[in-house]
Length: 367
Image (cartoon, rainbow, N blue to C red; front, side):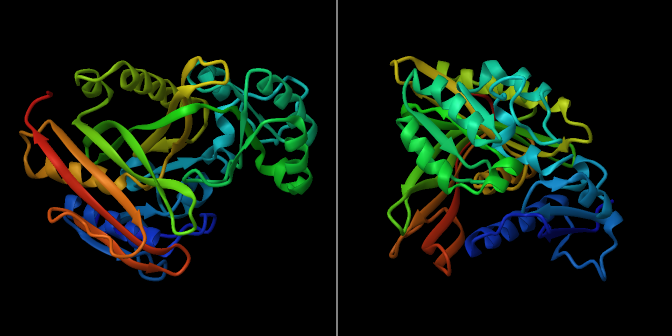
């Protein structure tokens, strides 16, 4: 039986903004209330790992998870993967061909299985492979170049010519390219991003679909600004019973296929999964939909997921919860009266920001 929920900052985790670390603590505290146990920050000197539930800042590697006593999805909010490459965007696309460069950890089976549910694109680990991939993609329109380690829409650039790509590759560290790769993907116009996912704690599962919003940050850049979710009590079949449009149903189907393909990764397990699905028009005017990436850790939508899960725990008759996690930049921002505020103030790196969650609707049946 779990005695304590702990926030854990992984030794291999990406740096976090202050507001992200505070929100992670909010998520961990909410989980402790669901599990009815205490909440603390992890301290290896005094915690018995066998009785802990971990809320890490990043997807964990199998070796690190094992050293903490994490044996399965009941021990962690998020996921455990066999290699660092698996927790990045790099896994989404295939290599350009059989002779393409690749690291030892590369898994061919996963991108082969998800080929039909992602956007046209390639993952490359050398400048030459990037140039060859770009020729194919640019023949149909603009391409989007992504750093596999980036998140929230950062570290991406739209490329319109081979010359532009060459200029970018000249500045890109070759050792980083060989280790982490680059993603080249067809760029979509009039694009929207949907979120599809699941969260499971102590045998209670919710599944959701929803929409992401973008906002302008304090530097004038367009970034992720939160998620609006429709959460159903139960597994993927619970989503099937909900009314939704063609676009949303397509996103759910594609995310489920992407999720099922994770069986290609040995020692993989997960309790929280989120898949971003982008929909829009390619350079030829064709409507496309495809999974961009996975998040197997606490993310921007997690406060909304936990608000819904808490409502399901408190009222077993509820079947559907509509909730939103909101991020706003700038000063003099106000949250609605019914909102749960997670952060309001000046982040040392990100500037003035407000983060809050609202539960919008509670339904006892799908409608």
